Amino acid sequence: MFKINSSYLKLKAGYLFPEISRRVNNFSKENQNANLIRLGIGDVTKPLPEACCKAMKLAIEEMATESGFHGYGPEQGYSWLREVIAQFDYQSRSCDISPDEIFVSDGSKCDSSNILEILGEGNRIAVTDPVYPVYVDSNVMAGRTGPVESSGRYKGLKYIPINAENDFVAQIPSEPVDLIYLCFPNNPTGAVATAEQLSAWVDYAKTNKSLILFDAAYEAFIQDPKLPHSIYEIDGARDCAIEFRSFSKNAGFTGTRCAFTVIPKSLKGKAPNEENIDLWSLWNRRQSTKFNGVSYIVQRGAESVYSSEGQSQVSKLVSFYMENAGIIKTQLEQMKLTVYGGENAPYVWIQTPEGIDSWGFFDHLLNKANIVGTPGSGFGAAGEGYFRLSAFNSRENVKEAMRRISCI
Ligand SMILES: *Cc1c(COP(=O)(O)O)cnc(C)c1O
Image (cartoon, rainbow, N blue to C red):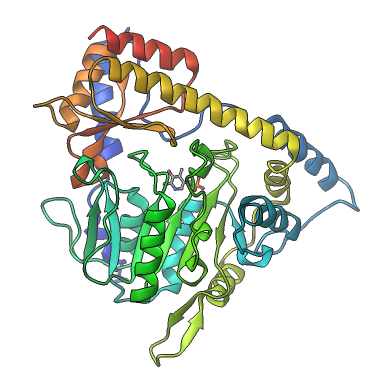
């Protein structure tokens, strides 16, 4: 009989979100009139910016004409989109990134998983803990880890804790690793990385000839003007980092799908014969073979994010969610809870009260305030004792949720 990819059998049974659903369903069965407020989900709630909708409608009209019809586009994305990305997201911040180093895609989630295809077996891999589960699970699926241990961690991965003990700073490992996944502003902790901290990572990567996989999906939420938005703001990053960006969170494209990955042409990795091979060519080959591009209509929508109308609408969306984060943070702090994040990221990361673990706090909020959040332990062993609330919701729901929390 044919064989399956047995690496999939190493995956922990999808635990976090099914377990949340199970507990919420049980609660709802017993409390049919309860009006649940969900602050657990990492999805936006506001409609698309008007500029994007206008651009996409126009693009549909074009597609209805003989002269304006577009079939397959370039696998790397249309040059007009790559040009505005390079200009607005990189050159304007003095990052030396050119349009042809940008690969437009239908999501950062798939890019950050698919990137493993061009990276060899046997790389030593580091992730932070807590972590966006995609980085870990995609390595498990690709057969790049050992089995799961009782702690929930996988053998063969190096976990770098980010928690209160280290001030939410990812500590540089003392031993060499080859691939390092970093996500700042961080999901789920809301932690950020300063230029000095990222410089230390770039120095480490250059010294050890390692590759940083930098996920900047939340860069638009950065409020502090001193914080870097891109790893390429750091000298030397062109030689050791790939960056993932997405229109999902800033422009509400979670259901529309558009993102991009930056692979500088100067980035090289080692072949078995010790030859240095540039990653750009491998990714270009991979995308040309396996991907047929993002739809013309959606790319026109993404392009309009960079128009002056689009920029002002996106900045209003970001401000709206960050005001939500502020409301959540202020209320929880008034209740003497210790709260992190929520200042440069749309996630508030709460230390659970003494004697209550992550799931205990989940049950407490569900039962007493009918609020659904996300237990920190679901993002990794070092997330135990923490709880994530998301700022992606209506103002009404956020205020009502905080009113209820203040009464428990
Ligand atoms: C939401 C999110 C993304 C974006 O993923 P898309 O596939 O582009 O929607 C990437 N990284 C992290 C950590 C996220 O939370």
